[in-house]
Image 1 (cartoon, rainbow, N blue to C red):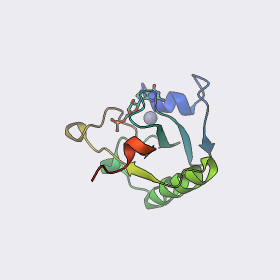
Image 2 (tube, protein in one colour):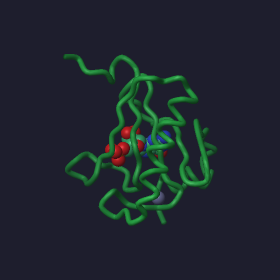
Image 3 (tube, rainbow, N blue to C red):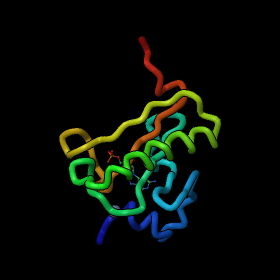
Image 4 (cartoon, rainbow, N blue to C red):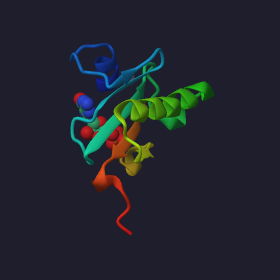
Length: 108
Ligand code: 5GP
Ligand code: ZN
């Protein structure tokens, strides 16, 4: 399967994982949109939230957000899941964005 995130998880590019457990890997976004921009990616291939059947995986993804941000000492952050092309999804392997740092905070 020609999926870039499956290849990263498979270790094809020697990508450094900020956090990893049996279910997810977390690595830096290649084109960061905030001072801290990480991607929490399940180790199984699921195209998007629309194709997700395993409810437990959602818990694993969000718990990994918490574990990762705790590990790196990031107390304030946003999480984002783009679902579908029109919503801006570019990589069709489910992932949760972690966006942190000044630029990710509300400006109001
Ligand atoms: P999406 O738009 O699908 O929600 O987010 C995909 C994200 O993956 C984008 O922010 C993009 O910069 C990132 N990305 C795309 N290709 C790669 C890659 O090969 N490595 C890494 N680390 N991030 C990638
Ligand atoms: Zn994949």
